[in-house]
Image (cartoon, rainbow, N blue to C red; front, side, top):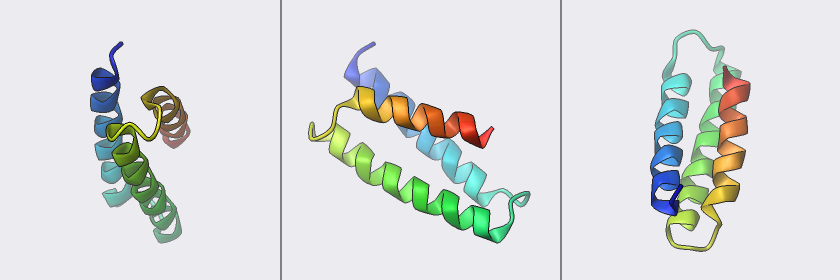
Length: 70
């Protein structure tokens, strides 16, 4: 899989995290944790896009986070 494809997948995961954050089903404190995680992933995504971070590492990490959310 190319780095470009990994970045596309990571971006879609960030969008999914936002949907979880906006869900009415979560208590406020959980939404705050999810928001902070999303903000961190956005920052890391920008680093991966600019070549400062290996997309493989970010992909592995965000995939684990998504698994925990489900």
